[in-house]
Length: 376
Ligand SMILES: [Mg+2]
Image (cartoon, rainbow, N blue to C red; front, side, top):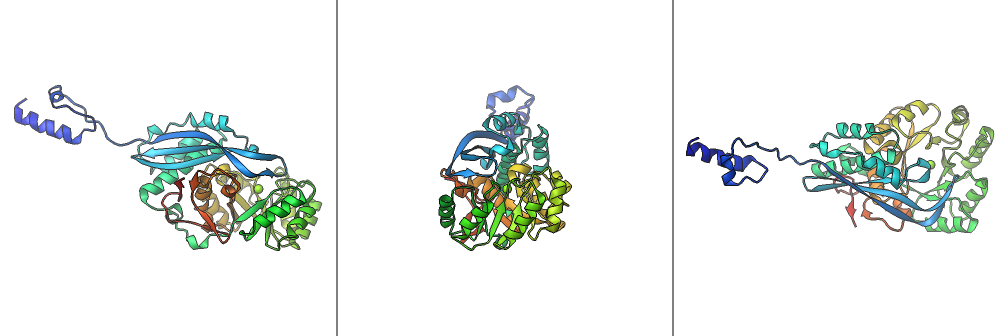
């Protein structure tokens, strides 16, 4: 090889190669030019949320919630995600960790291929919806940051159309219920948990303090459809807007009977986790509570919101007890929803993110790209 050609090759290799090529290595031709494209780097760590109050629903009580904080790094940009594991979903630090250990995102070099990446993640195992959501949220945050836009804008939603959020009042003693209702003054709507046999007392205790509109969530606590219908009539006279998951999800015939006769909309929660459930259950309920942790994240939640709207169902966007990370991800969808129950981060003492806020009771989105959060 003559020296002119060798000098040309040396300069060409130095310009195009991502590996460090020392000048004297050029003699050792042929040299492979290595592609510089960065790969997706995925990592996660367990975290435990401390609740401000012991939280009681029809099935159990608790004062902490385990979460998994995730991140995907690409070309120096980090997208954040989260899995929240309330007991009823059957996931824990252990199960989520086990699932996430199988996720190999380094096989992907293009974060914009959201569909391919999340179809792969979904195919790794069945269930594990919160673990899957933690990857989905981090990827959406990353892609939004790479595009320099928040997801509500990428989806074409109007940030001014966000609903008011409800604030949840768990089942408790009359004193605590009254105190929590007083503390909830900044919120325009309250969500009262029922289903433990003291339903009228719960409503009376709340009504002793405020006349705000109420959502009620029975968490499958009623077993008799006639009693459920009687309660629906009584609740409609107490300023209640809808009833969430009144009866066990398996009692579809009774729920359909109730929905047909109830003066209040009947909203599915436990009965509908993913899009396929929504398609199957759509004739039994008037609306659906969509949560990222149930449905594997923002990609599927967006499809569910659009499907439910297209067939005239009421749509609520909800959350678990979680940090501002997952709540802000869910909030990106809220302009397309009739109702929001996005109080998850307000119930905890040790949030690690700042994100969407509640201004005068209303879900308020910011202009930050991705899911709109910063690490505290
Ligand atoms: Mg619920």
